[in-house]
Length: 139
Image (tube, rainbow, N blue to C red):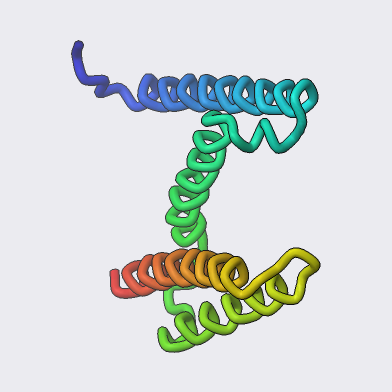
């Protein structure tokens, strides 16, 4: 297969991939909704398609993060000092730990698990965003 060199064909190919991705995502979502209506919402969460749907959304979010950083026109943005990111993620994780622990079915173990996951996801996302903005400012 030859490599496409014409930019118009490259753009058209990307548009075709986008349409196929949208159709695939709508198909997965409709199967999950159908499964949830037939067997209950908890059964839909146990379906492996749910994991694929969530994983696809997370990957798409991280890929769009790089694009959203490049959209800004300001050449020199004031970056938040990096030490704020771990501090904020620790505080956010602590808040979620308290919320889950204080809930009706909450215990300390589940609270720590939810707080750790939320804090880690917050930390990784904002660290990556900080890195992209810093790299763009250096160029």
